[in-house]
View (tube, rainbow, N blue to C red):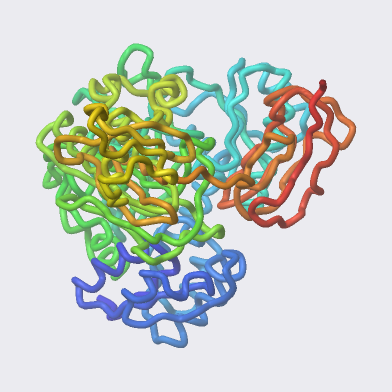
Length: 626
């Protein structure tokens, strides 16, 4: 076994690898960008090297700088984590050429599975069932349009080098195909440097089933059962679980057998995931599951597989990279109980799930469960990287118990002022359809009304009112408090004292509580404080909010909700637009975010494509039609 390992990544996955490496007695080395100088993964490593500016392409994606850091620190091995350089075959070759150990699959395996079109052809040859579609070399718009018509709508356009939902667009109507194709190509080029796409038939009730596989250099390949990752939003996984609900032993044998066949077809070594799409319209069937792609790396959701098998997958990665055989044979790997993972994102569900950036002034995670994170209180969520800030993982004897515990944990999250999806996660986990296992990849879109951010409940209003009132310490002899608008002590006073205050900028009226508050008291803010209830954060204040926030559209101005780059402008000055029509597209935190017309009108101004903009910058102005 080697004695030191450098993790060519950041945040949560870097911390995760360090945890196992330290337990195994290895020296740990971190790399970091200027934006991550104070990051948790930097402090948790035994040694850390700055490798460049904040932008990933000038730091974490610069393989030469990573190799220079390894040489300078005497690192013997490099673990790429996931994302960044983890599936870069050229970098894997460079690591080996530098005399270092690459903790991942062989470059040939990465290349074989790295492009979705070539991978599908390889799987067809290996006898693995694949989704009907087109993965040809002709990338002309005319050919792609014709192939979409042949396949039949709805179709899914996917960047051939894509992953994580980037460069993936569903198109239901032929009239929308050109716009979807252009967007998928832009995202593919921006995220992976490759704008080629493939087209697949869109399964109307799809489930996302994937199998964790592991191979060694002694010819052995095993699976560690399946995961269900069907709960997604915009093709981004939100909640994952293992095993998959409704999975019979016969279907499990079919899908894990196909996964082993796929891994062996590329002589796979290390941790990998074979992803399948299943038609859930009539339950899981062996002939209704098709190969979708292979991820030649450790997956974000690997903890659920660890939880139900008792295996440390990072330890296996390190041992296999050192030339050791797999620690267990297939018949020694047992499935135990149920595990679930929820991805906690820095995003605002009440504002179209736009990423949220800034300082984590208050950051409290639930206790008693596994929490994988790369941030801490006082840290920063940067515009430059992925908005996932933590993973909440639970394990229980049954699916029902796991879902209930994870819902409880999501409700215990406290983060401020950065917005998170904790309350949204809790609503998903509490939803009757999810509890019964009736999920597919369209679940969130179909249940949007019940999952969206709710108005403050009576519980929140009354508790916030009581806390605000008590924190004020109003003199009971005063007849009126003009700042609060509060009724004080009078002989003929009502039984419940009332006052006016604001929750998230909206006026409310409330009074005292006789019982103990059930909301959690968060940090104090100007004119009030924050309370947390069931995963949601509420800003409680006695003063009305200030106006002019990013994204404000009351005057027809479309403002940048965060720093980013203008990726596209579907319209130009003078164009007539209708309410909801895309006007400008902002690229930020690895995704595209479309800003739409707030009402029918005429475009007076739109920013130039390629412009780098700051938060609250005016990207476009629409003049109302009337």
